[in-house]
Image (cartoon, rainbow over all chains, first blue to last red; front, side):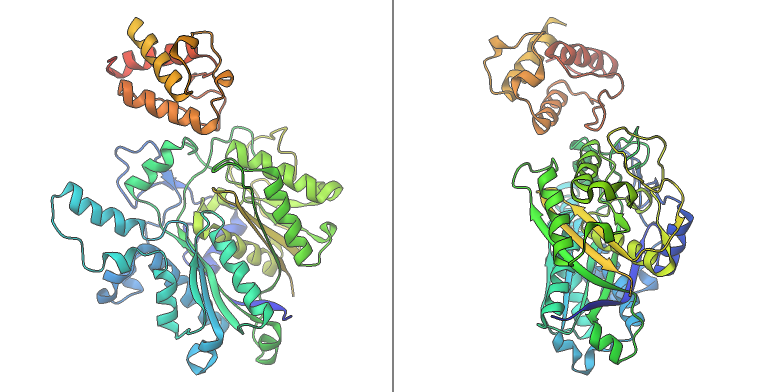
Length: 402
Length: 90
């Protein structure tokens, strides 16, 4: 079994348009949740989000490529370029055949679908753009990464709603660990700011009108975000041999299913995934310093997740630093696990614990150390990152400082 | 507002898949086995029926002072919103 390490990291989010901006914002603990401006909000109840209004596709892509790139593909390509450049790997040297591209996405090309349906249903036009289907298909971001970088090993997209990215990274990790491949480009991407999608979320009655305050008393629900995080992972042996900078080691992956309710989280499923992850990483609960929580800011998730942490960590739960960075970059759904693992890796690299922003008051049912509002200077040696999705898909990834 | 009351009770009974005669102002929604998703569907059905917007957030015990414990609570809330938002009680 190979040890697996991260040697490249790319991020684009409301909290930062590259890893270094993202890292600085995490340290500053400043939430990027603000009035939505990438679409008109007239007719929406939800006026806030963590969108990326100053993202300019033409700064990254030739104009003739854009008819094929939905916004979620654009984000994935931008983050992948950053990660691959940092890794200094060239996949067109034979390595491409031994490399996978496994990407998580919860919803795929929502913007493309919205735009083309509007043409037909609203504007009375008779045709869709000829590239509508290849542009909106959920696997498109992954395909374009393989084409741009010459990756010819296994590639596919995993969809498990808010656990998509953790599942993608977990599967990629297992492929490299097992020796099936030598390297992988993995992570998640999401771009769901369309009128129809937000109205759909509003109808579920889980959206916060003010901001996202995970684990805090007075929390009113979740806030949507958009973006992508992509990482390059490879065997420890290969990274060492070529003198690559190792950002962190992926230590384990655990995943379970609730098999109960389509939207309500279940304690057994959540705690089972954490337990499975620690077992896979051969870690004792006492060894974990930090948990990047799923922490959506909904009433249901935050209480269940707190209970799950108590159940698995016992007495050590009180010593754990737990934070939800969704309070700053929003809930990016299929990209969430990747953006949150990126936040965790930033903390491991620079010796700080990212905070839970917008925290106002202790909730008696959420009684852990949530690193309220200010980043904490402290080393992270071992961390886990939780994702618990609609549909009851739970996925937890463990990372280590190397 | 008698129409509102009987219409609301009918919508609740339909969502709970129970006999409308068994639902009164005093009936508690929890006793009708209306779970979280049923409540959201019920609110959607009421919004559609009366052409109103009900400010309900599943994360809060009460949103904008609206408490959905009994069928009577729902009737009162809908009646108030129909007046405020000029919805249609038909």
